[in-house]
Length: 126
Length: 283
Length: 197
Image 1 (tube, each protein chain N blue to C red):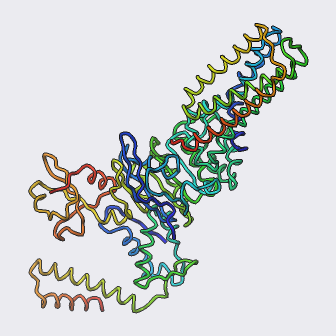
Image 2: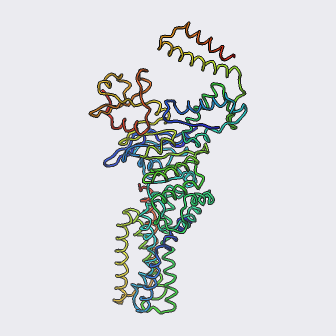
Image 3: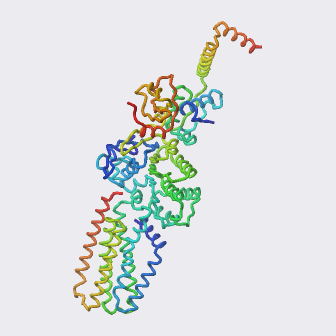
């Protein structure tokens, strides 16, 4: 498992960790049932506070990506199709918001956007 | 679970300096950094914890007991590094090891030898011939070689070059792999503590300025650099400290109280500490 | 305490080879000049001085506060110094006694010589150790050396002047000195329990 942290990005460290692990789970790099490093081992390897890694794991557990068994460790949860769909839907929403903001910036209306969408969709299919 | 170190309303009066009243506690399994300028009272606080000095009031508990009632068996569980040579200088490393092996029930010779090799400390040389860095590494090696579950380090890395400090931090990281192990480390070199610590406690002229989770601290504050005029525009309750130069102003702000349109830079613990201690609070 | 004695042994071994030599010289002079109690007694004293010597050696590295963080009680740290002094005194006296069987000592009989050495040594320990704990090694050491020189010189002078030791005299002085030592130990323990670093 690879985690690369950046002090420059505005994101808090625990969020960076949670996001990177989440992406690896979604992309299949981390398989369901796979054991993740303990919060202390991870803290030691990344040279950060154990409270940070605990927070990242807690967040992932809340979102349903991993589960912790007391005394054993944390494991990647069985891929939940609904979960992945949910994540992707969120991403699409975010991207759409960006597109709408950009469109508004250069005066593009809804109809023109819909046209562009249809055109591009056709291209994709062929 | 009881904290591994607990200070309640501890105070100590010297002729020119008063420490406290201090309330501090470190939960077991975590690392606390004690920061503050020289003379802030960090060493005094540590000496009080170790029963090298007695508080005028308040209670100090270590490992779940009153620190005055700690016996030799309890002391086996505490590894200490003070800001001095510590070991008698005229001994050789080999002789020192014989002494320590006799003093500690749970002395681990292989671990100690491992550290000596890792740090390349010659066995037959007398300690007085070591450089400052080597002397410090020796004390730390000894503190890590008797199955301690609490490490107390007073300025363990001061006066050492960055490479050596990094080596020592590596050792401390290794120590905390075990969740029963806790560390209290005081330093005025904050970059060392920033990475390592879970909690940061800041002392200033004998008073505790803050004691918080390091992450919470870093997320709570930000730095805004602006002109004097823009400074006025900032909401008063968001500004924790201000520093003004003839060109511009710097404000330490609470990010949660800052209006979303304003951007603040993230800053490190050192900036937070210096701003809080030196920057005036804006009225 | 074994660890503490070991540490002191190593310290002395590493730094005080000249001490052993001086003791030999003093004994040699003492016996060679036939009459000189001062040198013989002082030779024993030097070995009884080892606790003070060791405390001086430790001072530079601030061993004492650090030692309190190791698995020793304050009580053990005090007791060990007395024990060290007794061992030193014992060795010195034994060597002196053995040598005086070979060379004859004129002034006093052998038991009296041994008793004198032991009493002087114990008095020295009883005074110097609490002084060092209380005033620190620098002042404590000076005071203790002054005391010892005064004691040895006065006894040497008395002997030369031909004063006789009172006959039943050994028991009460010995008892008194032992009491003094017990008191000294109590005082040292009290001083050290309260001492802050």
